[in-house]
Length: 190
Image (cartoon, rainbow, N blue to C red; front, side, top):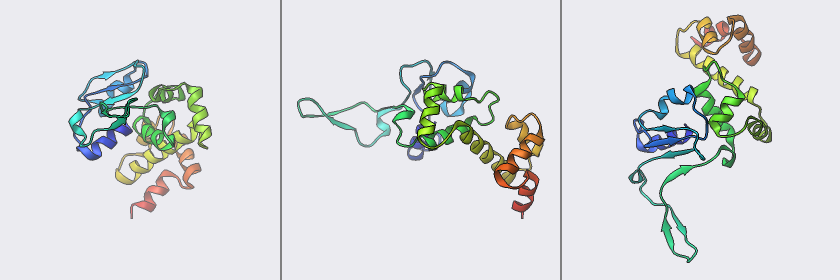
């Protein structure tokens, strides 16, 4: 979804890809993601790609052929998370889209990223992070936005974030911020 957001920054917020191809197996989360609306979503592909119209770009990408001549390449964004210099911001953005999903797991996120769960764990460790840390950050960011921007009850926020009880959410929030959700809301409502 990060690539689509980047293209939208230049093409306009209503732009939709011609098609999206994902390495992941079919699942309901990808199918219902509004980012993919408007173009066919193809799952179980050999590579992850966002396909868009050639005229979207003002300059063609050129490469040298074996004979030394320049050749225009078709524009198709294909890449894997491992190829990203720093995958952490990409994963953080991805998790923001899925943080309220009840089945959020390392396996699901690895599948979405086109990796094995162990490969994702290794990648995160190599960049000084962990899946649990990224999920906690995503949950905290979601909670902070809800507490700042709405009158949504703390029980509803806890439920959205898949906590079994509001008390579990309150303890986790306090551990991360030093404040309970109610204290945070009171401090920031002034």
